[in-house]
Length: 335
Image (cartoon, rainbow, N blue to C red; front, side, top):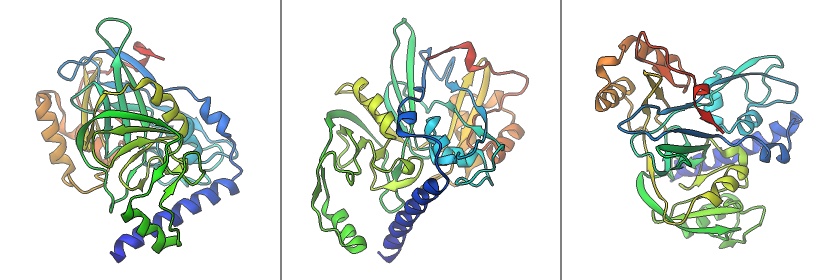
């Protein structure tokens, strides 16, 4: 129990430090800038048996300007803290050097193997939403970073359906969390009204058939890409505002746990790997080979390319099939 309290206090302190660092560095962006950012949406041929296209987006480069933080840039480009830090190891996230060129990891392998409804891949802390495209045989993919459960309040795996939608939801605080609040900060409240700045649910909430878990906004945007919640899925305020109206009640979904994803684009095979945040699959190379074999891509895989990418790719997709150049996403429709 003491370890749990220590972890919880650490996250509170961390988020306070984040907020102070951002303010001290004179953030260059406003809430209006974040709400006006491009919506990451891609239209692809509907995937069948892992193809023909299950890799979306393109990585970008960015030159740091005065006032930039990696936190702001992550939010501006629809990335989580985990993604931008993993892609730029050794760079100070609060005060990156002016003029430094950083990687924006805006390219993703789609999680296997359902390309319908809402899929949250826990290790990469990212949500994918699939809906039928306007043209026959096409699928529209929306993707957003998320914050997930702390190690002592882990986000579970499991299938669900969306069974409710609420604007300005009231947070009725579970007794276990209320006890934590009392112990940590002498806060005995049993609920927090919708619209209250202290309400961690933000402005929009999707209710799920998975008991006790929800997909919602947040009152602490800098926690996206971190393990900060009590198990629910948190999105940036502007991202949940975009997702909320397009997800109908009855939409199917799944919380999945894929540390390694395998996909195809332009005839080439790609892999993408992420930290095993809950310690489920510690043998990453063995896990990768198992996923590759399950896709039937073993004969197309160069193990040296795979091993190099697992060590050095920084969370980005990397090609593991030799002799074939994967097509750019510019060949396909990005909205």
